[in-house]
Structure formats: structure tokens, C-alpha cells
Image 1 (cartoon, rainbow, N blue to C red):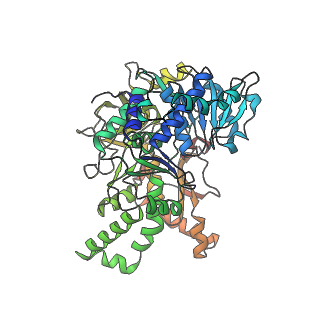
Image 2: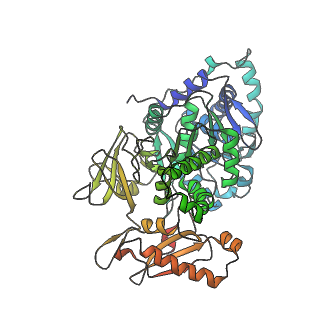
Image 3: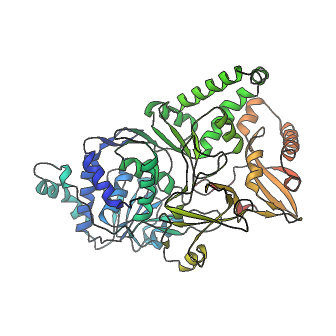
Length: 551
């Protein structure tokens, strides 16, 4: 596959799609064309140049997804500086730590977040700008950036007296091995590390996506994942922008009710999602319908069941806008029961696999060629191996090598050495197997695996996936306590309240859930007890449960 220069991909896209709509903020709605985006980028380039920002300098970015968030990101990387996108869910101390650790000299921030940051904790920061209108929020003593900003419009008029046009879009010539993104992970077992992502890593993801997805200029896309995370950034934002699509940015928490309304209005051509969206809709909309006595009876009648499945599929397709050909799941495994049902009704869902350190994609296969319960086939620009005696039958750590693999962790040589093998393979920390076609099958995380008294490997994620589909279970966590497996369950209190159940009823239901679960798992995977947990489990900004807090 040809290695495209990442920056030049966007120089070409902005020129080619100059008059098309690029971004719309869903709530406002404010829309920028590709030409207007390019002009805003030019203004920021003038700011950077007159402020003596150099190639490789770090510029931090934090706030909800918006058109100006995307413009700040693109202005930074097309200038040759390094963008440091920060998840807005990080607490202020962590935000300050990341800005400091990354050596960021500029910050683009949501106004509400900037108000929570203490300037004295950011001595290296030269200036902060508002994501509302790019106005100056702060400048370090001795800086004169307010004067620079005041003169930008006049310089634009002088430089482009006949208006800013496609031929004026010319971005830096920068080697694809340069670090363009410094992405701080939010791992579940420790403090975040700065992943150094190069233009080569990013272009590997984009050119692969271009080779398999059929997107055309003006196609509508709905972005609702956090763009500070590599998964959403790579496919909802960067790939779609490189193809000339019209991206609507949700800019709010993607609750199912809000999302379904947005899907109905935007009608996206491609949907990039996390499993939680489909799993919630399955539990709230589909399971109650399937569990009725008449429906169970009807589904046992040949031909009639086919018609029912077709109707459910049509309803689901319509709920998500009705125009998409692929519903791509990433970020976490899709619940097996949900996946089996979606496959049964021929819903075009497919599951990929990746990690921040691969910007993010490692494996993927389009529906309907996708193999159920796999994570797709390893990309043709990547290699995979399983650290086990037999990678096809014996679970081992998944290790990868190839174009998408990061350069390392910023200012952390020890962590970089630890994550690579002596012969240069990236250790993913995930456990799994492969088949003869290089489809990857994940069993769990190496750090969460439990070794039973009889020497059996127990993967708690597999048990949790079954438990999460049982009555009144919102989420669960399987842990080892004194040599026994215990399931911590945060109940679906909304469903409990709506049915008028008392606490004693819920306890009895959980006892039955334990019996049902233990009938579904191997003897060594059976749980001894279900303990009700009063609150949602604490999660990282990427919504992974912080397992280390509960062991």
C-alpha cells in the first residue's frame, strides 16, 4: 500500500472540496465549508509564525468536539507542530500535568475548562486561546500575542486582496516519520503516558480506511466519540475530512435518546461506534420484546421467525438513519449475545481492534466477511504474532509490528522499552489467538486474567459479558476474593424502580442470576457470590472500568 504523506492528504482535500461543507456543530448549528476551514487554519498559521512557534513545538487542545476543536487540531499539524489532544474528562490536576509533561507552549481550551486550571501550575505555557472564537484567554508576562491577534485580519486582507482561494492552500513539507500527535492514554492500571504518533502512523490508518470504505465527497458523517481519543479522531474526523465528507459534531454526551435523534436527522453513511450504544439499545428495546410469550412462540415457527427478524432489522436500520452500510464497533469488545443476535438478523455490524499505540487500528474486516466473535483480520500493513506454543489454539499475548506502531512514549524510555520485545514487537497486553487467515480472537487483558487454584486461566471479561445480559444487571466486575470468584454487580436501578421491586426482591433475582450464570460457564469459572454495588464502577475517561481499584 502506498504511504501517503499525512499533511499533503489534507492540503489536497481542502483544495479539492473547497466549496463543500466540512463541519457542522449539531447544537448551534454553525457550519464551516472546507474553504472556510482552510482560511481559519491560515489565520492560526499567521498567529503561530508571528509568535515564533517552531516545527515540533507542542500545542495542547481540550474541550468538547466542535468545528473549532477540529480546526485547531488541523492548524497545528499542518503547520508542523505537534498537537496534544486531552480528554475533557481528565481532572484539572491531570490536565495541568499533561500540559507540563508534554512541554506544550500554547493551549486551545473550552472556556469552562480553562476556568478550572491554575496558571501558576503552567509556567511553561505561553498562551491560552478560547475554543469558542479563538480569542486570547491568557498570555504569559512579557508576551504580546494580543497585538499579533489584532493584526491577523489586516494581514489576510493584504496577502489575499482577491480573497482566499484553493491555490493559496500550501502546507509544510514534513517527513512522515515526524511526530504529529502526542496522545496521552488513560489506562486502567496507572497514570497516562504520552504516545508519540507519527504522520506515518496516521496515514497508515487513513489509507487503509480509504481502501475499504466507500465514502464520497459531501457524504454525511456523525461524530459522537471523543476526538481526543485516537479511535474517534482517526475515522470520524481525519478519515472523513480527507474524503471531503460533511461531518456533524454532536458535541454532547451520546445518550441513546440524543443519538437516535441525531442519526435520524444526519443519516450518516458510515457509523463508527463503541459497543455500549448497541448494547444499551439491545437491552432496552429488543430484549423486552423478544422475552414476551407470544414472541417466543412466533420465533419457533419457520418462515414467521424470518419475517420477524427482517422487521427488527429494518427498525434498527431506520433508527440509525437508514443510509449506512457498515456499523463499526471498536474501543472494547461487543457483548457476544448481542453480536450473535445482530448477526442472526443480518445487521451490518463488524468489530475492529486497535490501541492508542497504533493510532489506533490493528485488525478489521468489513461486513459480511467479518468472522463472528473475532476482531477482524490483521491489516495488510501490519504483522501479528501470539506469544504461545500454538497461536491457533493456545492463548498468549498478542504482539504486533508494522506501519501503525507508535514511535514510543514521550520522555519515558523505560516504559517504551517495557512495551516492546527485544526483537521489536509491540506488546499489546491483550490475550488471544489467531486463525489461519490472521483473524484475531481476544480472550482478555493479561493484567486482568485470574489463575484458578487448579491452574486454569480465567478471563473475567468473558464471564462479565454473560452476566451483563441477565435481568437487572447494568454492569458487572468479576474479581478474586480469598480464592473465590465474586461478581460485583451495579444493578439497573431505573428498571428496578419502574417495576416496583423491593431490595429483597433484587437480592433473590441476583441469586437466580448466579445460578443461570453458573450454568453457562465452565466449572472453574463459576462464581461463589454476587455482591450488589451501590454506584457505577469508576472509569477512565475512555469509559473502561478501573479494575485495579476493586481487586
